Length: 53
Image (cartoon, rainbow, N blue to C red; front, side, top):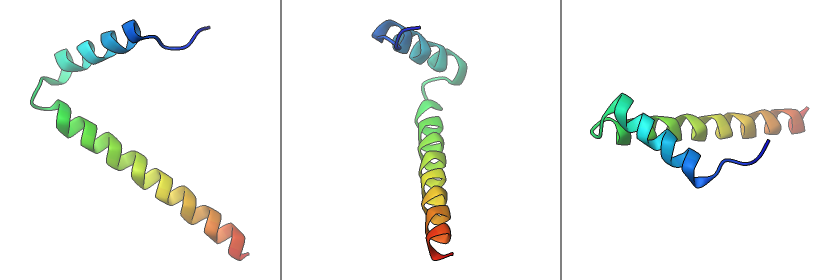
């Protein structure tokens, strides 16, 4: 299995555009970014809790 190339990324972006529409894509991107950020903060919090024990 190889890595994802530019053609696959382009296909994914086109499918997202068709599914969500141009107006909803920024909202979806923000929601995904916020989720990733919260996940990272949660993981850092777990690391701090383990260090304190």
